[in-house]
Length: 78
Image 1 (tube, one colour):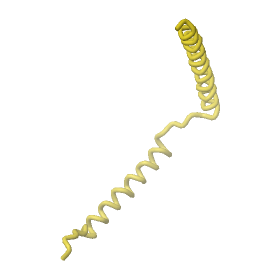
Image 2 (image 1 turned 180 degrees about the horizontal axis):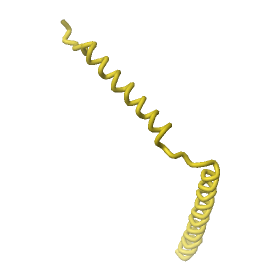
Image 3 (image 1 turned 90 degrees about the horizontal axis):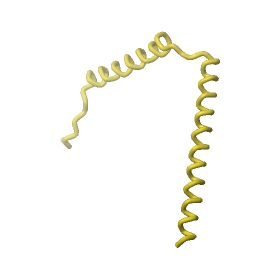
Image 4 (image 1 turned 45 degrees about the vertical axis):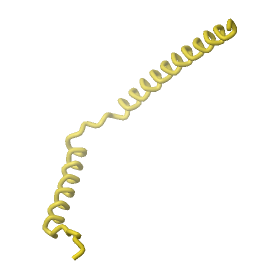
């Protein structure tokens, strides 16, 4: 013997049943228990995310420009 251990068929079948059961329960939960947002809710949420991203980008741009001007002023003095 080469020392390789093979899982018994019963153990493999048991593991496969666990996976199948997990998939069935996951599907059941997604279809019957999860409350999905409406199309209008999704649109309003997307709008909020876009506006917040734009504001954040503008703040970062302003900080970057400010630091650039400050450092240019410091290096001109040196």
